Image 1 (cartoon, helix red, strand yellow):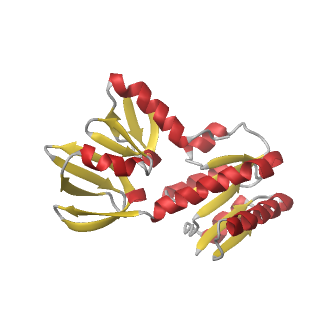
Image 2: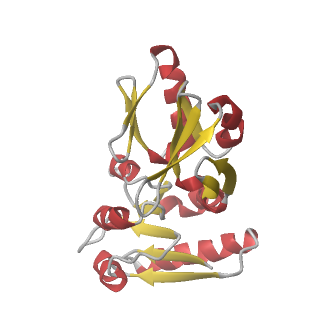
Length: 241
């Protein structure tokens, strides 16, 4: 079941988002879902107690007790996969929302206009999270969730899959990046170097000819590829507004 939370201290806005959600989910043929509503950041944090069992969370940024950015930081500490959407009357916090890997940043006075695109992206990302691929690794045949693959490194005729789990694990496969790149490009992977294919989801920033992942790992980007890599990265990530 798809689980969604809406946290907004303005009751009318929360109800509006729920109404838009119900309309959109019906449009996409999704009938099995649950929507929980919260009227403050503190209520949300206390009721969930570090177990944020949601697929999507809509967060108002400007709340009086614990604001949406603080709630998002708590969520990201334990749940990197939850899809976050920020809601606000202002655009001042767009950069902070970007750092929290928010899917979109919705303005309260433009909800009707902005919501359809937001839902389109959410549905796409949810389908990516469900996508799995199977390979005959050196370690044995393994089925991996595409969304959990952080990056793939080519080294000495082997492909090393760095995968996110309860702890980071690696799987090795004989082959070339060129052989698997076409399939993975469909799922928002980016070839940043002849030896590295990276899941854009885990990129924190691209600067000074390096790709930095959200855990601090730095991967090189050749000078001749740098501009193209940056352009493609921002194309995939999209504008926050």
